Length: 133
Image (cartoon, rainbow, N blue to C red; front, side):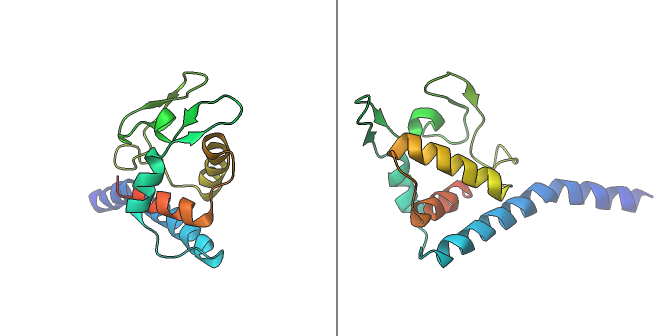
């Protein structure tokens, strides 16, 4: 009886890690099939803090505007002020576990930050960086 309970506890504890690895792996393979290659966490770090001018408002937007530079901390939505849970999987195991959810937020956030969709290379770089946080 104790062995079965221990097995269940271990399975449940490892499930978010396995799901995250699967979602990230799936997306990275998809981005490679779209022409991306050699994903770089270093390139993602530069991308994360790079400012992009919004032509409508004249504001400079960057990923850190909402998510901060420390991905282990809560962020705050620039428009609504709503709290954003940390992106770092090390402190928020729910992050990066669902392919559709990741793609949905890439779509929204890239358009808001860059005024365009992110490229497969940019998305892959960001995922590689995020999974190390």
